[in-house]
Image (spheres, rainbow, N blue to C red):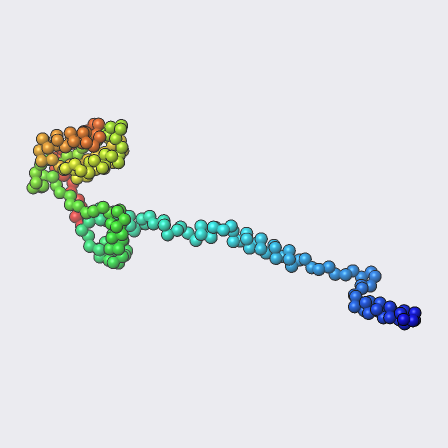
Length: 216
């Protein structure tokens, strides 16, 4: 190739490369890629995390779980009324606590199902009891090697016992029982000490009921 032609071709390539490359004039700063949006995104994520809180906080804010099923104020009011008059109708019970008869009945059935209400009974004046015999209250102290569970399990099988209450004070338990005569009472006391782990007892005999349950 002649020298003149080679020189012309080289100038054409240089012109073509220069036209495709952007060269900023001297003294004019070229803009840098903006980084603010990326940093703003990080900040907004951090702010969102602070508002939401760590995982698990939302459950604590929404309130107690469904497993927390203790009795409420209405349940306690219903129990107090039933302890005074267990024969009250559901309609009258609902009126007393501000519920419908069906709602009151549902609460009573639930407390019976959960074991809160263990049963219903009749309180009889000892002097009016046609069966005769003795009604006694026995204070009991357990032996040191007898646990409460063992005592309660054994005493449940003894005849004549109508109520067992774990109490505070000098004695461990208060037992209400019925005996046909002094000999039957003596046999019951012996069985309490032999079979139920009782160390000491103090027995009182009921003469009559000084007060009567309030009538509805």
